[in-house]
Length: 254
Image 1 (cartoon, helix red, strand yellow):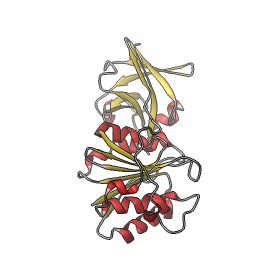
Image 2: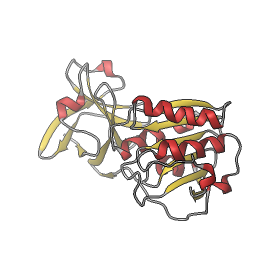
Image 3: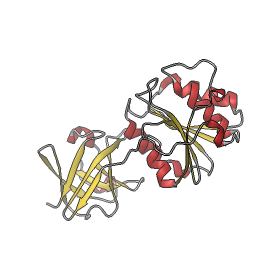
């Protein structure tokens, strides 16, 4: 069985989670899906999971812990979808992926017999989410993680499309400075356009590949996730535009 990890922890914290999982489920393969999500960036973590979960074998347990509310009243949840399991905090980070695959059942993680003995108020990734993921990876019954819940905190990616105008938000910034947006195929007419945000207007051009642009040119490209990206040929769209995760913008006809 495979367990994936998506977190904003980085460093040795991820290694500790792997150790907990392997101690409980020695045969589980633990894969870093995205362990360098920007700190506290729940929406960015949700996008990493959403854009990646489906490429894993059926039955994979996906753990996502981007959890600014750790130790507070926020719940811990597990979601069973048609093909996967999702484990993490009830702050929306699991929901776009689970919803796309088709939610079958959701449960609050409350069975303390599955947790580590000593529970820190700051590291539920180690003490709650990792052992529960390992339990599921070992073939444990989903019903034993806790009671059913019908309503959890939702998270949606903002997009509004009308004739000649598409509004979206930046969901993720990769290491090249490309801005992955909430806009998807069909939202944009693939031609020259204007990107508008906070009173600024920047001209951009649709391209199929990064190499089609001139050096320093702003491009809009349909990325591997199926979402449009704002990019700069051999440059950083983040630096050129000043946009970052959560910032909204509009794409207009010129």
